[in-house]
Length: 83
Image (cartoon, rainbow, N blue to C red; front, side):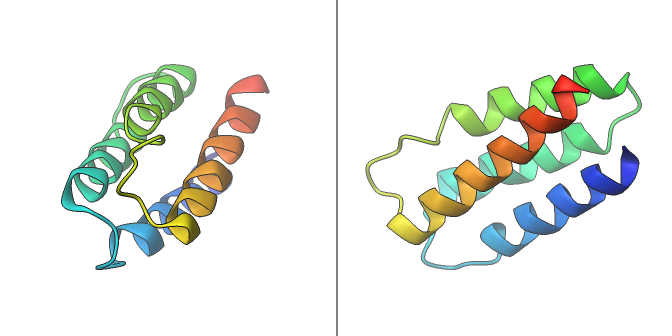
């Protein structure tokens, strides 16, 4: 499972490094990444990360390519949480 979390962190990094993504969204992604790297139980970390990302996932200022990547990240997190 930790391998999947590491893959999601990589996806988050890719979106976070994109300068066309607004700062508030990059900040939420950085927050989600820190939550995933926390010391709590895996399901708690994943739920916290999903909550952080969902809060900005419908931002109207987000470029369409970033929105697609955000949905991919959320889907991957949900699949981890479901296990």
